[in-house]
Length: 301
Image (cartoon, rainbow, N blue to C red; front, side):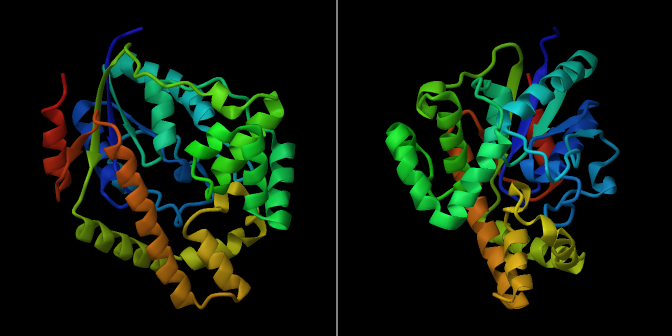
């Protein structure tokens, strides 16, 4: 195993991290591993702002559009699939680039992951049905009975977090919190982590422009084609949820687009908070990809 350097490019949606990662990999003569869970699904192109081929600069990108909608990937499963790709890139090039806004997926690869059970699709389906019938609060109450420590720690307004924790409790018969351990950064490679932090006003303007561009590119038509699959977890995301409500007649199109922008801004704020919580991230504030690449290159060992 060759000791190499993994450059991690994080940051909120619409911050320019995809362009930076591609340009950086091109300069370093290596490839990109994508840790953006929304972009794993092949049928979701416009709604996830998946980059076009010309935006990838001819640089190979791994884990873009490789999953069917029915497939479910956890952070651990991503890390297990990404590890051999990472090792191949380090052996071949000495360096690799990891990019994404999904903090759990990035942490799983750079800090390791707990040996939690794979998703139990039958149980998860039953839990989702319970959410529809009883509301999310009923599952939070059950989780609090089985594992109060987890309820204190997670965002209980996030259905995915609640369902996964309750699922692990029920499958293993043990509290989810007892199966989680404080992750440690891996020591078999050099790690450089950079987080793009555009000015808030600039970031929000980019988000609004991106949503408008996605609508112009046919996001409504894409959502209509995916309507029969709306029950799948992959489509329980910003952009699709609001347009599904519009197609149901519950929202005007203008209101749905306004909500997509608002909810995307909220998501971006959470992404910024995630990178701030760990001092190991180097904040990069730049308005051009070229300047960002030069800043990152100066950080490399």
